[in-house]
Image (cartoon, rainbow, N blue to C red; front, side):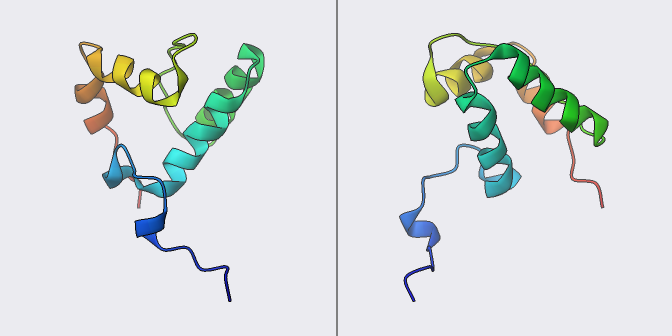
Length: 86
Protein backbone atom coordinates (compact mmCIF):
# COMPACT_ATOMS: atom_id res chain seq x y z
CA UNK A 1 0.00 0.00 0.00
CA UNK A 2 2.28 2.75 -1.28
CA UNK A 3 -0.54 5.17 -2.11
CA UNK A 4 -0.47 6.88 1.29
CA UNK A 5 1.24 10.23 1.33
CA UNK A 6 2.18 11.80 4.64
CA UNK A 7 2.20 15.57 5.11
CA UNK A 8 5.81 15.36 6.23
CA UNK A 9 6.66 14.03 2.75
CA UNK A 10 4.66 16.66 0.85
CA UNK A 11 5.72 20.08 -0.36
CA UNK A 12 5.50 22.63 2.46
CA UNK A 13 2.44 24.89 2.20
CA UNK A 14 3.13 28.60 1.83
CA UNK A 15 -0.18 29.60 3.45
CA UNK A 16 -1.15 26.51 5.47
CA UNK A 17 -4.42 27.94 6.77
CA UNK A 18 -5.86 27.86 3.23
CA UNK A 19 -5.25 24.15 2.78
CA UNK A 20 -3.58 21.94 0.25
CA UNK A 21 -6.41 22.05 -2.32
CA UNK A 22 -6.06 25.82 -2.76
CA UNK A 23 -2.33 25.42 -3.32
CA UNK A 24 -2.97 22.67 -5.87
CA UNK A 25 -5.38 24.93 -7.78
CA UNK A 26 -2.83 27.73 -7.74
CA UNK A 27 -0.14 25.35 -8.99
CA UNK A 28 -2.43 24.30 -11.85
CA UNK A 29 -3.10 27.91 -12.83
CA UNK A 30 0.56 28.86 -12.59
CA UNK A 31 1.49 25.93 -14.82
CA UNK A 32 -0.67 27.28 -17.65
CA UNK A 33 1.54 29.14 -20.10
CA UNK A 34 -1.35 30.83 -21.90
CA UNK A 35 -2.81 33.94 -20.23
CA UNK A 36 -6.19 33.30 -21.82
CA UNK A 37 -6.31 29.84 -20.22
CA UNK A 38 -5.36 31.32 -16.83
CA UNK A 39 -8.12 33.91 -17.25
CA UNK A 40 -10.60 31.12 -18.07
CA UNK A 41 -9.64 29.38 -14.83
CA UNK A 42 -10.11 32.62 -12.89
CA UNK A 43 -13.52 33.18 -14.52
CA UNK A 44 -14.56 29.64 -13.55
CA UNK A 45 -13.62 30.40 -9.94
CA UNK A 46 -15.64 33.63 -10.07
CA UNK A 47 -18.63 31.82 -11.63
CA UNK A 48 -18.46 29.33 -8.76
CA UNK A 49 -18.73 32.17 -6.24
CA UNK A 50 -15.05 32.95 -5.67
CA UNK A 51 -13.38 36.34 -5.89
CA UNK A 52 -9.80 35.89 -7.03
CA UNK A 53 -7.47 38.79 -7.53
CA UNK A 54 -5.42 38.17 -10.66
CA UNK A 55 -1.94 39.58 -11.07
CA UNK A 56 0.55 38.08 -13.51
CA UNK A 57 4.21 38.06 -12.47
CA UNK A 58 6.06 37.01 -15.59
CA UNK A 59 9.07 34.67 -15.37
CA UNK A 60 9.11 34.43 -11.57
CA UNK A 61 8.09 30.82 -10.97
CA UNK A 62 5.83 29.71 -8.15
CA UNK A 63 7.88 30.94 -5.18
CA UNK A 64 8.83 34.23 -6.86
CA UNK A 65 5.17 34.88 -7.60
CA UNK A 66 4.26 34.44 -3.94
CA UNK A 67 7.11 36.73 -2.89
CA UNK A 68 5.84 39.42 -5.27
CA UNK A 69 2.27 38.93 -4.05
CA UNK A 70 3.25 39.33 -0.39
CA UNK A 71 5.14 42.51 -1.32
CA UNK A 72 1.91 44.07 -2.68
CA UNK A 73 0.58 46.81 -0.42
CA UNK A 74 -2.91 45.39 0.21
CA UNK A 75 -2.27 41.67 -0.33
CA UNK A 76 -2.42 40.56 3.31
CA UNK A 77 -5.52 42.67 3.97
CA UNK A 78 -7.17 41.17 0.87
CA UNK A 79 -6.19 37.55 1.57
CA UNK A 80 -7.31 37.76 5.19
CA UNK A 81 -10.66 39.23 4.13
CA UNK A 82 -11.45 35.89 2.44
CA UNK A 83 -13.21 33.27 4.48
CA UNK A 84 -14.33 29.74 3.85
CA UNK A 85 -18.07 29.69 3.20
CA UNK A 86 -19.93 27.21 5.36
